[in-house]
Each structure stands twice: as structure tokens, then as C-alpha cells.
Image (cartoon, rainbow, N blue to C red; front, side):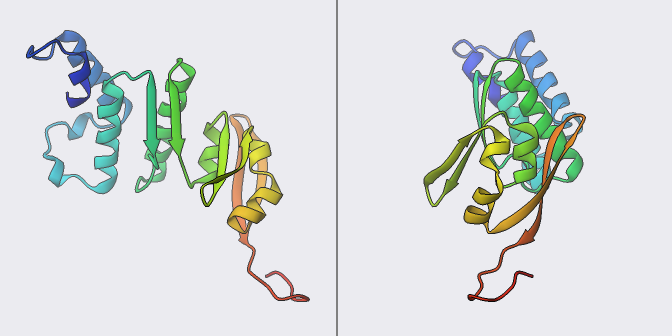
Length: 169
């Protein structure tokens, strides 16, 4: 219900619209079973999902999410990214900070690649994550491909600092 505070009038308690928004947010983040638990009994992943539910309950026009899948199991990582993508497709502005390149390529419409605070590339995920950018910024090589639901990128090899004449491993 804390996510609903901006929608309430004065000291009035939550109304039917607030209860409906909270129920929808809890269901969307697979948190309905956690609603009665104290926050200090939740795991890190459960807490992250509850905080996302709180944000979604506010029905924001703009949502900023910093590493929203950190600490989550693969099922819930996909669930969170699908929910954020759905929110964006419904007209909200969603800005997500991620280190997970696979999730960024799969779920984001636009990327901004930063290196030590400066913009290296911005735009289409495929272009932003082009091999030269990944090599320069992250010192990695990646495999990429196409599935029915969209593109994927899989970091596959580190590029180690090397002396002239040495080979990559």
C-alpha cells in the first residue's frame, strides 16, 4: 500500500482502487504469498520483488529500476523483465540500469552503453552491443542469435590483457 500513497487524498485510508492496484502488483511480481510476512523475514530476492510490487502499485508513468533482477532466480529474472517490458509497451517510460547484457538485448528497445561515466554508444541494442563496443568496454566476446521472441546475446569469452605477440585464450 505504500506505493499507493501518491494516489490517496489527505488522511483517507485506501479505497477499492488502491486495493485493486496492490493486488494486481502483487500478482504481477509473484508476491501475493509474501504479503503477510514481515519484511525482515524476506530473502534478498523476495525483498526485491516486493519493492518492485510497491513501485508497480503506484501505477507510475515513469519507472526507474536499478538492477531489478539482481539476486533473483532465473524464473523471477524473466518475470521481472517481462513485467517491465509490458509496462513500457503500455505507454509508461521505463529506464533500467543493468549489467546483464543478455537481458538488456532481449528486453530493451534502446540502450545507452557507458564506460566510466561517458556514453560510448546509444540506440538499437544490436548496434550498441556490437563486437567492438563489447571488446572495448567489457573486454569480452559474445555469441548472438535470434529466437522467435527476439535477439539474444551470450557473453562467451573474456579478452585478457596481453603482451604483443601473445594469443587470446
